[in-house]
Image 1 (cartoon, rainbow over the protein chains, first blue to last red):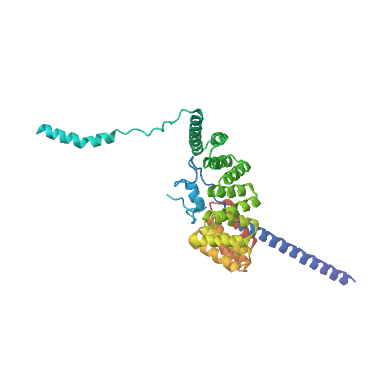
Image 2: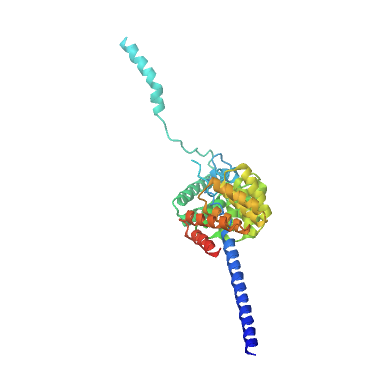
Length: 85
Length: 267
């Protein structure tokens, strides 16, 4: 009788232990997933292009308009590129 | 003989003397005394002067003063291209005053006046992103790419917006095209990797991140992302090495360093 109670108690403890470990593993996986999402963020948006004078964007020397249409990353003054001299 | 010599010397120096007598360029004199004509000339001169003052204020960081000058320009109903330009410059002033909603409205007015105004489109995408209005940013970015399909800034901007919206297919196409024109641009390789990862193409993502790191070995964010990809593929040892290196390279960025440390602790 006592041994039957003890064995049932042991099974219960083992079950609780398994449940606890599963919960910890699930929480760790969730934490890792959250961290991974934080790690995979897109790059920053480009900085604003500068002001334009009274002659407007059509002028040959309109640097912001040239940068807006430039085909290369450097010409477009994108983040992480060195400014043109 | 002496007189002849003197005459020769004087003749040789006259052009130099004449060249030395330069006068500053003067404003053209009005060719009419009619009041409407003179008024139009005065308004044109006021517009030009206020533009110059606004640009001077912007260069000095006096954004409120610049905004006031540009608002005065717009009150004079300037013709094109000055109208759209004034709206564009006013948007810049508002942006620096943290009035992004007003800045977006001014840029939309600039584009309405000049539908080919690429700089205005570029800034509108950036402003809408800063406001957190991804839907508006996407609309502006689509318009920008349609107006300038080969523009690096257009492709990059729309790619970033697409990534934030979860549209990995568009992001992949845009960054892919950008890299055809700028193959050594490390950030584009990084963002293309994010798109590939989102589409489940982990091998392609790892390849792009490796290229980014070959171009910029201390690119901590790319190293961190590579660690995540390794983890997704089940390569824990490689992931751990990547996170360790990322934590080292992110010495100047506490937030990124903390993230790398947290990833190390979690695996």
